[in-house]
Image 1 (tube, rainbow, N blue to C red):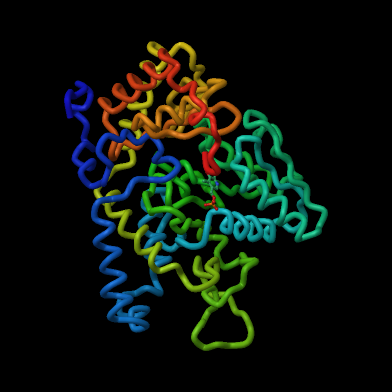
Image 2 (image 1 turned 90 degrees about the horizontal axis):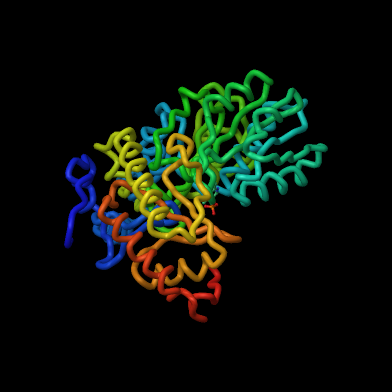
Length: 406
Ligand SMILES: *Cc1c(COP(=O)(O)O)cnc(C)c1O
């Protein structure tokens, strides 16, 4: 490191940086999309492959508790999102978990017709809701309003309020507690997608009275590409809900091989098939880095990093327009700027070692992950961005060609 920003001197999380493998010359501002590799995970995965799978073989389901990995991993995530023991399980993808919890929630409000969501939701959540609505064929309506209109749209017709807490494009943060209370007052249930919250900001599911939640394992939780997701079901609903995917892992006694389905009591009934042991083991191990971390410290540092980023960008890159809320309390842990040629600028930035991402039509997105980012990184990243904009070095055909994943 050539220089050190004065704010980094009292960074209580700075000791965590060495826990991650960050490539030389890279400033990684995309931990909101794919978290970086925790340094100890390769050795742990190698152990799982060579010792557990290679040597213990099928015995490892018991001897290495593979069978309990979804619940053991869920418990570690639960600590970060204010979920009591036995309310979180790690399994499947976020999209599949949206399907399961939305179906379960709807089954608790049989007389009501409306699924309420907003335009800030991640498309997969809306696609899944729309597909489930068609499948159920009960005249349900998927109502999608602007984020600021959600509260007023919570009426007694709403069965389920389904929102993503932190907007994936702008970082705008919904007030989970307030909206959940409004949903309950109208007799509706609330589902929260924590894809951009878990590991990024303090979350208090139990304190907010959330009914269901889902979230990603590969974003701020650093579980690796395609890592299993998680889902939460409030204690009071667990034995009342039915999963729409009644697989044997959710059965009361999978190894009794009964011909009839009987859901197990508790969160386990939301699991479906054989757990993905390798990727769950990676996620479980990745969560080690959070064990001695206070989410309040992460939040404090994330705000400090993102405030510095906004100030630096606005001072040095006047071409860019802030797309995130200016009030840090109204943002998650990411900051976005709009620029018409944002895609090409982001490609030029990535080529220079500063990795963020782009969301159509014109949003350049930067994630702040205090476990492995410093204030000096922020200043250095903006220096490179300013230079790219000044020299227009982004204006080259190779930076304009869109890849499959942006
Ligand atoms: C990233 C993200 C997802 C991704 O779902 P997958 O099933 O893992 O592809 C879902 N919801 C939100 C809000 C996201 O940000």
